[in-house]
Amino acid sequence: MRSAEDSSFNSLNHPHLPQNTEDFLDLRNGPFVDKTQSLLHLPKKFRWLLLRPPRFGKTVFMSTLDYYCDVQGAKHFAERFRALAVSARTPNAVPDHQHLCLLFDLAHFWAHSDIIRTSTQLSNEISFTLNLFLIKYATELHLSSPTEFLSEECTDMFAEVFNLVKARGYSLFVGVDNYDAPIQARAFAHKRYPIGHQRFASMRDIEQLLDSDFWRPLMAGTHVIDKLLITGTLHLRCPALSSLALSVVPSLESACGFTAQEALDFARPFVKETSDSPDLALSCGNYGFPSRDPESGMVKSILHPQLVVDQIYKLAHHPPRDSHPFRLLSDILELLPEESDVLAAVTIGDLIDLLATGFVKPGGKVDSAFDFDPATAVTWSALYYAGALTYDDSLADTLRVTNSTALSFIHSRLDPIFGARHRLPWKFLNAWYDFSRPDDPHLLAELLSEVLGDLTRRTLRSQREPNLRGVLELVIQKGQRPVESIILLPADVTLVRLPSYEPNEVLTVELTTLTLREMWHGAHPNDDEPTIEALQDLHKELLDLDEEKLLTRQCSVWSPALGAMKSEPVSSFLTPNLQHRQILAVGGARVLIRQCA
Image: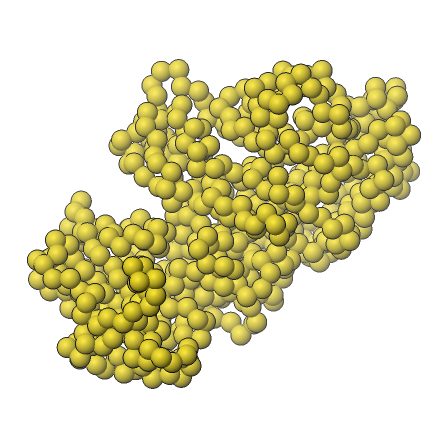
């Protein structure tokens, strides 16, 4: 990405970035990314659950649907949606499937007290929202005193309102935003309220309360609810929702977040020069969301909208607003143990392996329900929904780190543990000092070989192997030489720029990794896949082999020219007389370094 020194706010008459608003009309009157194309194919009836990372635009989309579907908005439709995609095809038409709109935001539900008070708070929140609804639609519902419609003796407020709506011949669009907020708030209450959180209602009690007092009476109104949108971040257990067959249709799966082009167009009014798409993706993420429709595949390359806004502030020399897009991720990472015997539990060791290898295969459904019970494992699913991971475009059923911001949070959790394991940072700084001077790389080769060997032994049974990118990401980052996200670079990039020991100097280094399996196939070109035991034996052998013999070993690699595998000696991967440094990892055991010519 172009550095901050190369960009600045347009000094005159620049529009203001959106701040502290998620209302469609407020945003519509300023800088705006038009996502209304997702409304073009709305079915007349739907039940959708939309899960996206925090600050990803879910509430904005909910607001957009509200204005689009609201029966009171018919006379304002042309004004509100003028020149947007949804009105481009039929500029003078008003949607023919409009409704009374009932919106709940469970982020307003206070879950920080005992179960009796929590139950009262939920009842008050429901009553408040329903009364606002009755006041807004008093004319349509023929109510002269809307605030008196719900009596204190009313035992089922939802049923009273739903019956009235049906009697007046209307249907409903119901939106429930932040449906997981009460459970999240209780799960991490110990952080916000270190004294007193033990007296709060338990998560199980809150789950049961929401199920009995909110979800079940709400879902009893499906006869009058034509459109239902539920949004949140984490997939939770909600028994009342399990029978609804909630789905997300393909036309809505890109309704939140920006494409690379949308992000660039959005940034252009604020900065004199914007970055190019690949670099913007590095900092703001290339999120991929699997479709629930098998025929539509994967929705790819969606950028995090809040991170785009934060990046604009950064480019314009302004501190970004305190938006906390990764607060949930930070909270979840704090729950991770160093190691665990719990099946499917993610540990700090697993995060280290993720950075070392570049990806992980979750081995299960990512949309499985998340459980905040401390006795239950944190899964890859939770990290995916919190915005740390996304689907890899090139590897089926695999997850990788989304962007540099999420990566920094992961580093903050695992670096102290990884550093203690390998006696960093001083061991690295001594080695990096020698490597930066073009005469003595052996300390760095020893350190990287040690780390590579340890990571290889850990990951052998997972069918993944560490690579030089991951090793350097872990070692340099903890070595207190900040580097820009080596593991997020495109796979075809082999030359990387690394910080020299000397301030303001940069080293160009070529990174090549020959995996242990490639070395095994080089020695056994006609055999099937090796056993774990065979790989372990080869790994031990390579550890003790002197460099001269190591260079003669064969390695089987893919040849694009041949369209097939071919065997070459290790020495062929080291090029003499280069103008840059070269680091070669061999078989997960050894690291060889060649300095500049």
